[in-house]
Length: 181
Image (cartoon, rainbow, N blue to C red; front, side, top):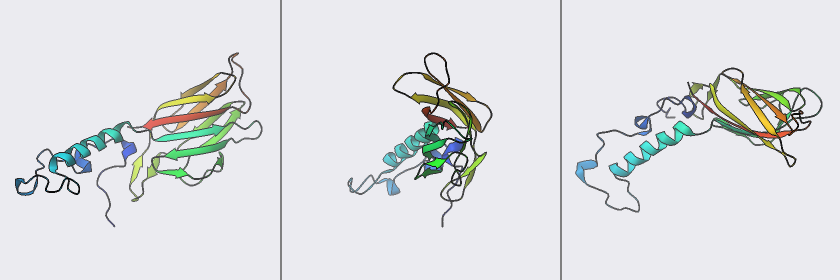
């Protein structure tokens, strides 16, 4: 197996050279593309490497949808997509699959989401995780707001309120967040 160089995308340390780019990249024997349907020249590959680094710099680390259960100490994670994997089924927030965040109920429409301090990619390369720029959106037909607070490098708190500033029982929201150092 070939282990990739550099850190996983969520560490945000990659530049175009990590994706095979080189400022001095040239076509073999200075020949351009022979067959444009099957070949990629140095010019095209260089653009691809640069664009890939740009995409990795701004991609979200996590996108999830949560249903705040009315009773108990847990909420239901209806969907969760991380750069390190996708949960194929919904899960109880206090019993996540390996590698996914926990969601603990604090009260009506109020949950704490805890991420790991490090995640591992498909090749077994680990990278530190620091939550950045969390954005929560309430899914509601009656209106309201989802307030999000970055508690620490790995903990996010989301509170859902209606238009009268009353906590919403059974609130449903989405959360997206980035990562970085």
